[in-house]
Amino acid sequence: MNGWGVFLAAHAAVSLPCAAHLVLRRRDPVATLAWLQAVLLLPGLGAFLYLLFGADRIERRWRRRRRKAGEILPDDRPIEPHLVHAPPPDLPLGAADTLRVAIASSHVLPTGGNALRVFDRVADLYDDLHQAISRAERCVHLEYYLWQPDETGLAFLDLLARKAAQGVEVRLLLDAVGSRKLAAPLLEPLTAAGGRVGWFLPLRGLGRGGALHLRNHRKIAVVDGRVAYTGGVNIGDEYRGRWARKPPWRDTHLRVEGPAVHQLHHVFAEDWHFATGEDVVAPERFPPQRAAGSATVQVVASGPDDPARAIHATLFHAIVSARRRVWIETPYFVPDAPILTALATAARRGVDVEILVPQRTDHPLVDRAGESFLADLLDAGVRVFRYEPGMLHSKLVVVDGRWGMLGSANMDIRSFRLNFEVNLLVLSPDLAAQIEAVYLADRRMATRFTANHVASAAWPHRVVTAACRLLSPVL
Image 1 (cartoon, rainbow, N blue to C red):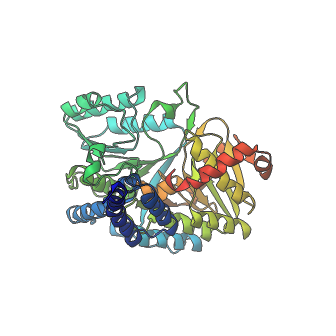
Image 2: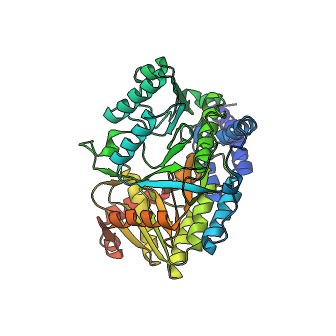
Image 3: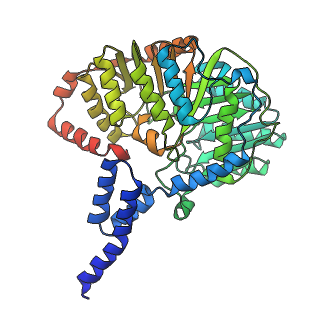
């Protein structure tokens, strides 16, 4: 056999099993065809990239680990029975149906009796979180995608180390890619004081079933099992507007008290167990929960392990069930076809659909891809606004002025399919009014994006925008 024969035989031996795996396991025809072309037309490299980025090893591994976690971490947390319920009877029809979708896809019941506080200024959030941690008596459990080794990050690490030295259980779960700048020596004071640090899908584990592109994008803080925080805010100076080389950041976060705290705590517990193997569920960490307010909250968590894509399914139904208006705020807008169609259809049937995005983000390719999708929606009657002062990192949706969603998930394919995310579906007219007020305040600092902007763009800009749209599945 000559050299070409050996090469073709080797290529077939590597690429054909990958191709068979693709056809048997991948369900998205577009993604399947794209990967097939890469595997067959890029000898060696295509198969390597598929094994690294495309195969579903992490999905199968996570499901096995999550099944074990489900056996170890029972879901019978002590919440007063009347606070765990199906959709309340007085909900608007669209909200009730969306809540049923969230229940069916996330397998978690909503809880009533929650008190929520919206933070639209990160300085206020950090102060409140700092005070809550300072008052902790039993445990502090934190889970973040990004923790910067800057003044803000180091100040919180110092606080955690002091609480650990006082005997408080401190656990810090970090994404191995998002927080990669946080070097081990910076964590030594915390671990020396008795705190524990876990890394989600560390890069050294790639060969054992890890995946570089599957990241934990959740932001959860739980203090003494009594109060929780979640939303879009990570830990770093840029969220305070302290980076001279970056524009000011605007983000939204929630403080939660009541039964929903246990559900957020359980998301942390599953992630911690997956990353470290340690069971953290114990009565002293999950104290009995009673009513703290009047809001009904559904915790919706999803990730590449979730075949129902709970956040995507809930968001899709929220859009299609809207009767009067859907207002959306997201830093990155790279939707898939169902979400794009749902938004366009809602606008065409007379729903006031608005999307507020930043003028510029920290990802220029995503900006260009998003511009292409937004241009499509303009034709359907969707109104688009671009936030001028700086980076808008807030992720929120408010529907009909009565209910909405807020959390860590962006409106992009990465959040829908590749990242581990957590959102709150909140059924409370009072909180919806607060979220709408936040949205309107941001919109007052935005400019309208119209068809004239699209038509007047220079042809090189149009070419780049179209090319970036082709990359949208991997952005």
